[in-house]
Length: 189
Image (tube, rainbow, N blue to C red; front, side):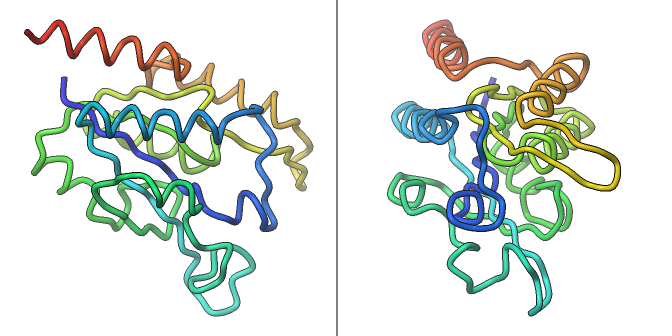
């Protein structure tokens, strides 16, 4: 099993912008933990950065401070930054060719938002025949209210995890993932 960690959209928009992530508590700290673990264990780290096209974008506007990847993430080692314009990290990007070139068969999902870019990317990966490990406490979201109704961040996050676990991903906590990755590393020898 050759993994790559995707750190999806951990950008200032989710901290100081219009979309502050609120659930689960500690998701950012867990994202940092999995980045550090991946770097220490030679698991490639790909930073995915969302950009809304158009100069009048309300969020993720290129050049705005909210568009930038969080500085704590950038301080850590990473292999590549991949820019995307749609929820799926594979759509119109160089992610799929990079994964093929590097013989990756498993992607690890971390980042924001659980129900949008993380969910879409996990589904795309499964459709491409990849194994997917979805980190339950290193992904996150916020309360949503729109014309279809309202849902709390906790309910939304948990609904996506349940759905992911049905077919698309192996859902696990940060600690479970680290134990699995360590076990696999030693089982190789």
